[in-house]
Every structure is written in C-alpha cells, then in structure tokens.
Image (tube, rainbow, N blue to C red):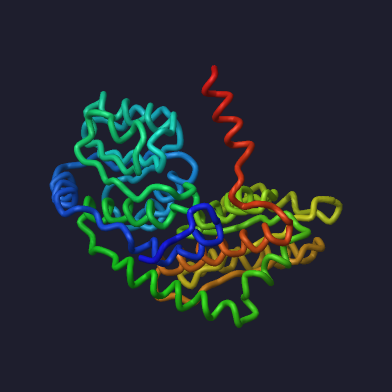
Length: 336
C-alpha cells in the first residue's frame, strides 16, 4: 500500500478504500473466534469510545436483524450487569489508552467473559486476561482509522456468528471507482459542502443508516469544527419533528439519508416529514447511493460524507487535524 501522510487529514480520508482492505486478522485468532462462536453465547458486547466505538455501531446495525444472539455496543467504563461469563466482548481502543475502554475491559476479564482486544498499542496491549489480541496499524487519527477498525471488528464478528466473510478489498475498489464518479457529477462533495456551509446539518437515518448519520455528525464536528446533529427514524417522528417550526431561528438543514433497502413504512415516513419540513420553510436534502448491499450502502455514504466534512473544513478555513478542545479535556482529566 502506498504511503499515506498521517499528518494530513485529507490524505487519510482519501485512503479510506485502501485502508478498508489493509487488515487481515491472523488465522489463529479467527480459529479462536470460531471456537467462541460454537459455544452457547449469551451475547456479544463491543466496547469503545469515539472513533473506536463507531465501528461497533456499524457492525451491530448490519447484523441486528440476522444475528441469533444480541449484539450491544458500550461507550462507557461500565458494562451492563447481564454481560457475564457467557458473553464475548471486543474491547476496541485505537490508541490503547482510552480510560473508559481500559476500565470496561478489566471488568469483562473480572467477570470471566470471552474477552478480545483490538488496538494499535498502548496500555490495552499489555493488559492481561485477553483470549486474543488483534494489533492494527498505528499513526492515524482515530476517526481516520475508522476503515481499519471497522474491518477488524467486522472480521471478528462475522467469524463468531459463523457468517460468510466479506471481501473488504473488493468493497474498497467499489468505493474508489465511485469517488471518481462523484467528482464529475452533481453529487460532488464540494458542492454538498457549499449547500450546508451556512446551515446546521441534521443527518437523519433509519435502521443500518443510523450509525452513518451519527458518524457524519461527528465528522462535521471534528473535521469542520462546525455544529451538526443526527437523529433516527422512526424515533424522531415522535418528538423532534415538532421542533421544525417556521418561527425557529436556527438554520437547521435536514439531511435525509435514504436507503435502497427501506421498508415501505419507513419510506412513507421520510416522504411525509419532507413535506412537513418544506411547509415550515426548510429545504431537506436527500442523499442516497446506488448499491447492491447494505454494507456497500453504508460504506459508500460514509466515505462520501467524510469527504464532504473535509470540503466544509476548507470552506470554513479550519484545520481538520486539530482537536484542541478534546486534547485539553483529556489533559485536564489526567491531572485529576
């Protein structure tokens, strides 16, 4: 794989397709995961924070409707009391030094869970009690390392659940080809960035696109240093919809992430809220990606919106690499 400038967010984001297929989990670990999957598992718990956590949410959303065991994600130092020795846990910390993840991993070991680790180094790598450790490439910002983390988590979960392995290199090729098409189409990321420059985007998804909406919100926050929010259908139809009033001075821009795999009822909800928003003076934007599978749809939309967040950073004149406030918070907490 060609050199990627890890000090340049644009370089890292544009490498998304290549990074997606760059991690191959050792066969010994995969054999262990198959053995774990052969046992009577109570469930699977994926632990992580920030950029390390979102991969777990993607995998959970992908398999929620096909897995015969519950899959949960935990973004905290405390894991639910029902996660016991009959559960498998995957503790994900890109740096290996995430305070909450370290605490949750220690607790999973204490309870006798089938504990696995995914990290690039740090304290987590030296923790005792793991049945297996997947070491991934270091040097990237955690949010830019998403395709690396996702590919590792996906391989592990597919193996535990006894599912067919996804060809991630092939998925990467699909993303690369589509990126070239975007640049010469009305869907060009820089044009989308212009559309949302003067607004507060609200990314709205449903089912497997819920974590994509959340990821987009986080990327706008961190890369473009701009406010953004996310929500999901049908839940937001029971509360948030009432806040879209023509007397509301906040310049919200509903960004509807539409799926080729929507149920009829979800499609109807999207169409009705589009009408309601328009009546109140808002102009919803619809984003959809032609795809053959849910995972393709998720990855295409994620890659596209990652690029949009960089284009928005350029328009706003900010450095997408800098995370000064997050760094300050961690530093001050470290002194307490």
